[in-house]
Image (cartoon, rainbow, N blue to C red; front, side, top):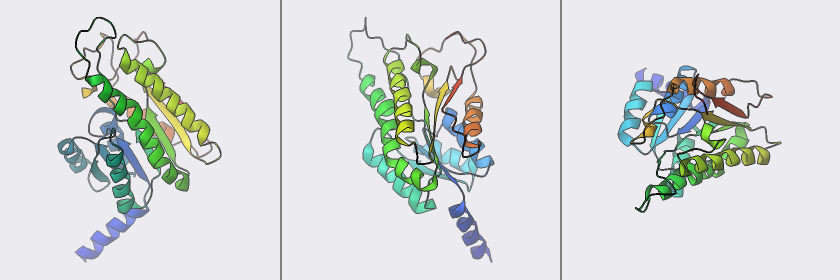
Length: 244
């Protein structure tokens, strides 16, 4: 009977909706995964940190499936999709959320900014690769593609190249939406202001109020829960009092 119960459980997971989240190990990605699983989604947790993914997967339980993935590497993303389809057989929503920030300036620095290449490959190439690899599966389910931009994808930021990568993400979101007209796929650009997450690393945060990761996750879930004929294209979320 125990074996039958396990088989039945896995069968039910195969037929449930599947939500793939990159950058899922911390911050917005982790908060979204927890919220989605609580609402009945099977969540695929993708990030570079195997240890953090394992901890989060254990916290969420049976509805979570962790896959170590570096979105800046095409083969790593291919493996992520392959393992997801082997596990669940479908994709219903994808959140291209992986990204990081470094604040070195264009003018005034003397050292080679090695982090620039990694940031562009993760924030821009990684998001574009996620779109290219997952959209064919989302077409099959008339699914939902979400991508994390930023408030600084609208304004000029003192954080320089990071801001430019988020302007690029804004363009990716708009281009994907245009391409997918007629397929039934919904496309949403999530644009947070300052969020209290490990994302900031050594870069000092502005002295403004901060959102919690759960605040942004709630915005993600709002878009997912709309009727199929409603496509929320942009969700711009600032903490109260953030000036820009």
